[in-house]
Length: 130
Image (cartoon, rainbow, N blue to C red):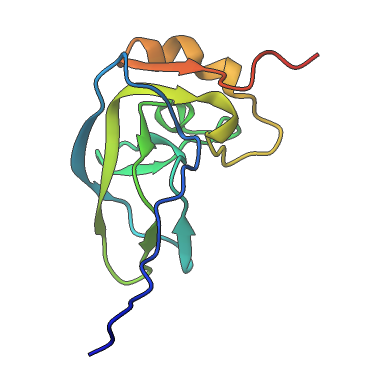
């Protein structure tokens, strides 16, 4: 047994924007993926017609997938063979620059009102960029 051990520290990833709004989490079922894919912490999520969570996609032909409802709490590897369970934030205040969008052409500001209706608030800890 070593007398000195190296311990990994905690790194602040700037996803959480404030503690003024309580962080509430929930374990939910994610839709089966069409290919191997890992969703990253902070990914914006929606619910498909089957009630499963998927990445929010503003370019989708499916209306429910265009409406953001939650933020992914930690990295999650999706499977092509089965559904997986992951943890999401259903409430809290998040840094808008740290939210991950599925579409590069999308803008987090387009989802601010629908997220606010769900108890998810956005802030910018870096201030407004001109």
